[in-house]
Image 1 (cartoon, rainbow, N blue to C red):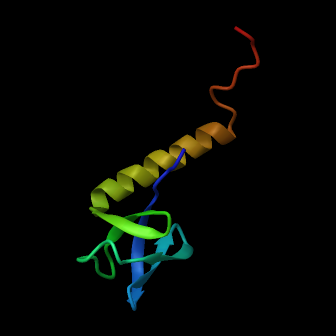
Image 2: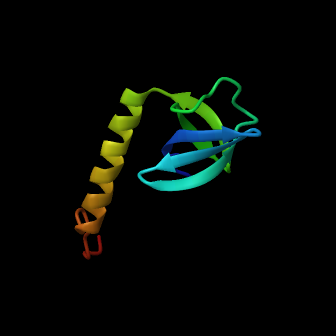
Length: 83
């Protein structure tokens, strides 16, 4: 299963972007996305920025992902019963 996490572009140089996700920085190729700029949010797959995404959607998505992670960490929904 792949999970695309929205990332903010903090720098672009020679078709490579530095992207930031919650303080973690990585590199992503910009070859597949022509109109992205520093400050934009993008979806990255296999090291390539493939889609721009608006900030409101990013914030909603990150909130949902943090809630899901907290639920899993708390053991929520876990059952040891065999059906």
